[in-house]
Length: 257
Image (cartoon, rainbow, N blue to C red; front, side, top):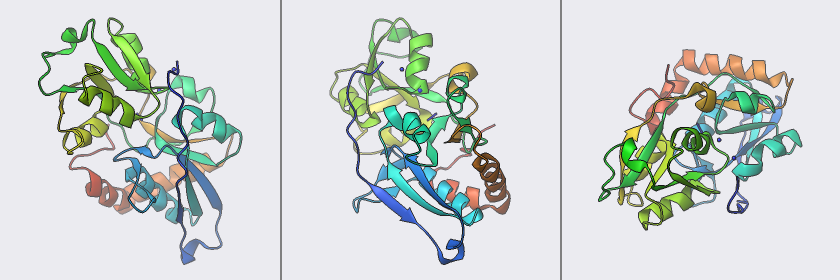
């Protein structure tokens, strides 16, 4: 995800998912924090189980590390403080590796990298980024996308939301003129019934100072788990397990450059 003033208070989602296997019964046990309101990367299915690309990748990493992993859904706005308060051991939630976040936590190597994009209603008169001047644009609070809009779309009115679901409702109902998020998130949404209102206007140039170098797994400063995760990421890339999971969700290389 692929990051800061809060306008709405986010409600906690009490959803948990357990991943364990007999082969890893003797290994380490980790609790993983995730904001499960960001499909297709993380979401809660009809049975109340956390699913998504991030979740499947994490399960593969846990299997590689012979670890037992439990997922807990956590509000995005407080997810880093919760990690540092030891409420869980790592964050896997499409979190971009940025200089600002690196002051607070360590990160694994990236596990995917996609650019930001803008979506607008299908009947919008907005035809390019220049047309956004003076318009209201929605973004999820405390995200790289909100920061990107503040810096690069400064002539728009930025409206922040605690979850992506809420900005989607507002652009569909005409309360905002456009929204900014990861291109994968917006692309999946506009292909769904819920996103039939809207279309992708354009992708945006990556600002590495804001967008970072892709999404990584956040851990507490100095945690040796970082090297274990980096080794596991390289291993599932080499084994083909990463591609198998990627192909379940995407028809392109989500790992990026």
